[in-house]
Image 1 (cartoon, rainbow, N blue to C red):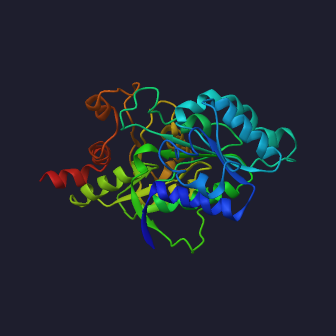
Image 2 (image 1 turned 135 degrees about the vertical axis):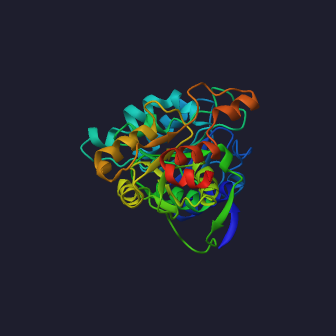
Image 3 (image 1 turned 45 degrees about the vertical axis):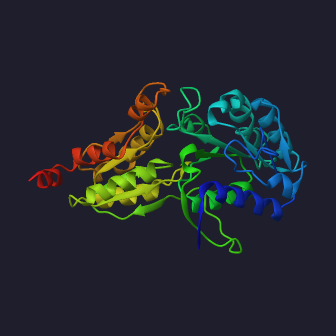
Length: 334
């Protein structure tokens, strides 16, 4: 194992899959000479040339439309969008074409399309560049939506996504690109499934269900709670659609309490969907109402101070846990 950044893990996955399968190519804005907005594709142009690393116009409809057509005709495109916020400009191709073609044509065509998109707040990108819109797309049958939190998962899940015969939205939080983590040596082949979550920390008192950057914040909260004798289990669902409900319910059956932590807005978001599924399938195991930690219900402010106030924190997760583990909180106060 070696320690590399999330960014480098993604680059390795793309490079390895392009070497493995000549049908794989990547397209997007400034991904060739410039190396992409977050330097994920740096060096790929020199290795594979302009035929397989293709710069595009600043037009998301063109990027996804081109990728969609080439996927239908036998290639395996990786489409990079500069930010998830711009995916709305290509929402017709994603929702009405990519998600539905296999169904509408009786399962005849495969559609091996990966759409990579940075998302999330915390870097002062303002209201139009800081959104996490995974729940919008996860609502649509026919799409797979994943949000890896670690370099290990970023590489393994991207390799799996590229090999998948269905469209995959691969969402990368902007603040994770420089996060470091252990990844197997390049010579060691590995993949990570797109339909399985993982227990990041074992616990017996409460289940914190989370994903993407909030995994790291939830782990910090679990460390803080441990000082008060509260053993929090942290579940990284990794995939938004399909979601590993069995893993979540297994944890709920053990802890009997749940906090869901996400960066996005509360109303009709990913967390509310998860809460509904837990209530539907695991209500009898719950000893307290599910708590929900989210970003504030406002457009993301540009001001650093206001942006920080709009995003969920470690202390928010800690407070949510203590709200439904009262006996432990009382003992800590004494």
